[in-house]
Structure formats: structure tokens, C-alpha cells
Length: 473
Ligand SMILES: O=C(O)C1=C[C@@H](OP(=O)(O)O)[C@@H](O)[C@H](O)C1
Ligand SMILES: C=C(OP(=O)(O)O)C(=O)O
Image 1: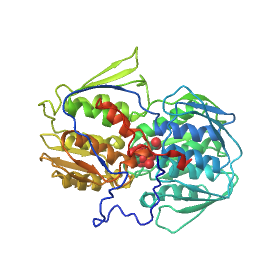
Image 2: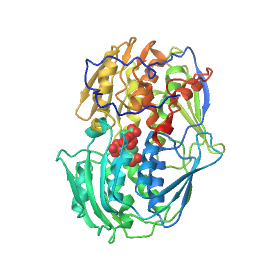
Image 3: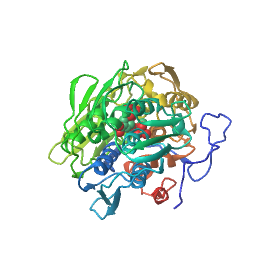
Image 4: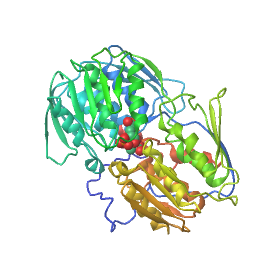
């Protein structure tokens, strides 16, 4: 067991001269020889866990989170909320992936520094929260985090009357100076680079003296289901957000209720496992799949049939099953597809991996904003798939893939958990896909390698991905 930190200041994922790191994070993705038949449980949703943590810390009374995610992103959120004054304790629960959490709200304290790591939810959800404190709060994060767009957060705080000092680049780091209250009212923002700018403001807005009327002015707005998730989470705590027209949200000043909530499994992290059924053939089932959810991973039920999967849901047992038929390995082929993934950009890396194995051309659009994710995902996917012999072209708003036989090779993960998932999918069919650092999976799914091994029906072994998260807590 070793502690891994993403803080090497010399690390430059865009530097082609960098030698692959053959260290404990090195992982050769396993190939699959025949059909799989797996039924898996997955840890809690990152998006739900981090929203419920924030709302619990803003609430009037304590809350309990059952089956929350325990990963780097949730650990960063927990630490940040503690630094801002909240009480958060682990309590024993019945869940296989870690303890439950109790959150005891407290007056929000300034005079601290927040480490956002690489977590979009921390860097976009917490500045409006921290601005409710009295005193300065500094926000910073990983090297890759300093590339992620933050201009809209900074500008929206200023529009709310909060003093913010930054270097004008519209990125981390920056410092805000809270005065103990935010009056609120009406502001307009451009959230075309990330839905998280909207969610971050909506979450804290019930605590603004006059609430908030938020208008999105940009041409497009990605990840709408994540905004709906925010609105739904607020509604469950007694705050009714009105949307009188698309792109406008009205949040009243209102008490936020404490709540005991069971966190759903992460359906976006289900993507690589479900996609594997199409490559290997056979069936992959996920337990505890919610019948009704705001998670965009639910879109996989409509998306995977585009590649020929048969998806069934058993409402009695809450098990979702993807049947990949013979699969690519069993002699089948995968069609090329044309699909707009603007609703669910976080599903794109797994689905692009599938397209790289297809026998027809594919075009994935609506994902230009992925350039501002953990890494520039369009550049990273194109570079790594092409490095294996693929034919991927970057479009302004997505990727185009032509069929091309893939071969063994190195795959850089760029600190991006979903780049590791994509490599694992391709590696099912292409021998010797070598990841430089699979430990990046700890961002949202530290158990990825073990679950992948379970998927393939092999003995589960502790491995490079057995990351000691205590280092983050
Ligand atoms: O609010 C959230 O929990 C998220 C919103 C989305 O962000 P973008 O709108 O920036 O894509 C998504 O991609 C991210 O993984 C999680
Ligand atoms: C974009 C993602 O993460 P974040 O919450 O850091 O934006 C993601 O998980 O795909």
C-alpha cells in the first residue's frame, strides 16, 4: 500500500519527450479471450456525493450520507468543507465500499486555503460557499487543475459583489474575500464551458439574502442532466428552484433541510464495464441501478443499443444488464455511430474507445468543452488512439474516427481517470496496451482495477490501483 499524490510540479502531460513512468502505476490492460458474465456493484456517484456534502454543510440540521463515494474527489470535498468549518465524521455502515458520513453544519469560516486537486466539483461548487464566510479563502489545485476554466466562477463572484484577486488568466489559483454575507439578486453568466458554473451558484444561492436569479447567456450549455441533478438535490431539501425559461433559474432565499440520503452508484463509472460486454461478448449486469435518476449515466440505456447491445432492466431486483451478444472478440463487429454527447460528456471517453474498435466511421459531437476537463480529452484521446494505429481527427466540437487496425503500444493517462477507462476497454481487444499510470482512477473509482479483474472473472488481486486514500483525508 502506498500513498499517491498528484502534486509533481514538474509533471507536464503535454511534453512528448516525457518517458513513460514505469513504476507502480504502470498497468498492462488485460485482454479478454471470450464472453464475460459479470454482475457488479459499483461505489457511489461522485456528482451526488459532492452535491449532498455541500448541501449538508449548508443545511440547518445534520445529515447522513449512506453509501457515499470514497475517492480522491470526495476526499478533497470533505477536507475543504472541514477547512470551512463543517463537521464531517465517518460512521460504520453496511456498504462494501466504505463508511457512511454524518455532516454537522457550522458557521462557515474563512481564513483558509482550499486544495481543489483536480476536482471540478470542488473548484466550481465551493467558491460561492466560501464567499459566505468572513475572511479570505484561497483556491488552488493540481497542475492540470490550473488549466481548467474558472473565469465564469470568478466573474460571477464579482457580479455578486465579492472581492476576488487573481492573475487575470481566469484559472486557479485565486483568492476571494468574503464579508459574511452575499446579497444575491440577478446575474448573467456564460456557462458554455461547464455546467458546474451553474450548479455551484444554485447550491449556495438559498443562503444569499435575496436568493438568486441566474441567467445563462452563452450559446450552448453542456451537461444539462447535471443541472437537473442540482435542482433535484435542492428540492429534496425543501428549496424549490424555478426555471421560467430555458437557461434561467430562480432560487429563493430558503432554509436548506438536513437529510438522510442514500447515494446511488455512479452510473457514469458504469460505462466502461457495460461497454466491455460489447467488446468481449456476453453480459454485464450492474446492481442497485436506480429506476429513476438524474444521473446522465442512465443515458447508456439508449446509447449502447446504437452499437448493437440489448439492454434490460429488472425493476424487481434493480439490476441493469447489457447483453453484447457475441461481442467483437466472439466474431461480431461494432458499427460506426454518429452521436451528440453534449448531455453526457463524461460518458465520451468510454464510448470513443468503443468507436476506435468499430468497423465503420464514427463522429461524436457536442463535446468541445471536454478540452477543459481533467486534461484536453479530445487531444488526449486522439493522441493515444492514434499512437496505437488509430485514425482519430479532432473536430471543433468533437472527434471523428475512421476504422483502423490497432496494435500494442503505450497509453498516457494524463491524470485523467476516464483516459484509464478508455485504455482498459481498448486493451480488452488489443494486446499490450500499456498505461503509464493507472492510479489516476482514484479520482472517482479507486477500485477500478479490482472491479475490472472481477469483470473478467479472474482472481481479484491487489495491484497498482490499490491506492491509499488516507493520504488525501
Ligand atoms: O456537476 C457535476 O457533478 C458534473 C458536471 C459535468 O461537468 P461539465 O459540465 O463541466 O462537463 C460532468 O462532466 C462532471 O463530471 C461532473
Ligand atoms: C469532468 C469530470 O470531472 P470533474 O468533476 O472534475 O469536472 C469527469 O469526471 O469526467
